[in-house]
Length: 285
Ligand code: NAP
Image (cartoon, rainbow, N blue to C red; front, side):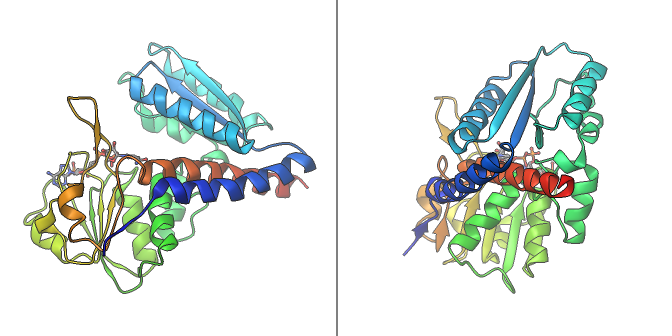
């Protein structure tokens, strides 16, 4: 029988653990702090940042929201990041993507102190992840791994097919799975015969950004299917990259959208902020 991987429930359990640790840290000195930087008024970004702030509040993490106009000069944005890098209340800095087109996103991400880069997007952190010794595991990929582990889904020796190779999701997920001894195949827009490749996957991670891209015919019976996609349909509802009704008839495990990877991403952000605070406090002790 297909098991639904309930990201909301798993995230709630992780947040409960984090809450206890945050309480101890707050009593010992001060709470972990997260600064979110939002440039412009992209509606999805506004909602993401608001949800992250609420999640911080719920576990006792101090949070700051820096809302900047979409016309801001790149150097002004970098000056703010420099201040946050120096701010001892702040242990995590999150730059909400996408940034407006006149801003060089790489340059901005590189300006974040790698020790506070809780999204794991700084090249130092990507390099560490590639070597198999991550400082910060990027939040969404970390959430995918936590879901597999929660259900004790076998990773070592498994065939894992990842659809998508973005810096944010596909590439780091494939590295994490490879470091756990899965045999990985990464598919992208130029991959031929993607259906046949998918059917070989014991684990399939879909991070494409196309609603219902993964169909039942692409899934090996019993496979674990992790749907990272969040796509807003014309009627305003959300759909993942996986055709849930069809695929859930074949998969061994499947994540829903919403309520799957999304809540896990936020839980991992809180976890990274907590870990960063512990590391910084240990260094200054
Ligand atoms: P992205 O940067 O647009 O990357 C999409 C990837 O899919 C690219 O590697 C692209 O290939 C590949 N692709 C596109 N069309 C394809 C096709 N027809 N066949 C095979 N591969 C194809 O997107 P992303 O940032 O990785 O995000 C992917 C999805 O996850 C989006 O829906 C996003 O909203 C969602 N997301 C969710 C969370 C969460 O917390 N749940 C977090 C982040 C992202 P090329 O490289 O060849 O272009």
